[in-house]
Image (cartoon, rainbow, N blue to C red; front, side, top):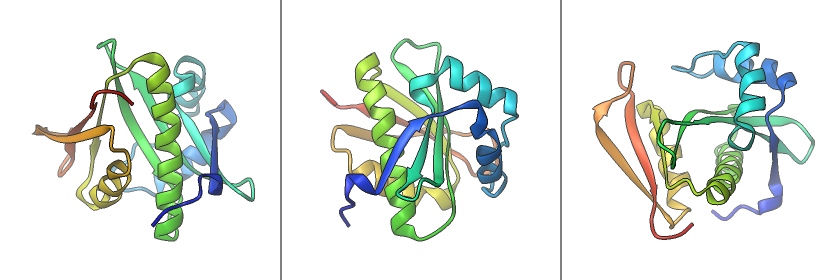
Amino acid sequence: MQLPRTEFRTRCLRPDDARFVAHVAASSRGFTVPAPYVIWMLSRTQRGLCHIAVNRAGKSVGYVLAFRTTRRTEVFVWQLGLIHGKAREMLGAAMCLCRALLATARRADYSRASFTTLPENEGLITRVLRRFPSLSLTPCARQGPSDGEQLYVVKRRRTW
């Protein structure tokens, strides 16, 4: 299923997105609800790595929160949260958020991202990442921090 790039747009995370992020995180199993201070801090210190997806009507429908790690070329994707809805819309919003994150990665020369996910989200993540042929997805032997979470690493193949 090919989605038009104009179905969703992204913008950088802002402090006033705290309520939206909290609402989506609270409705997603396994997510930590970030405090407004965390959203404020991420919006200022990780500007290009944290985004909100907005639909044509101007409604926020998803977000991605990521931050730099101690490795110069790596980011950790803490949360990719979506308003629950039709699969096509969720996939489109997830693709839009990933494109925004990848654009920052290209500019900053990041070559690797890591994240954890629960088994029920692996299908969506796999469908999204398969649409980016410049990326390789590798499950790690270690588990994530809580029951059932799997740690993954996404690496850039040669070029973005």
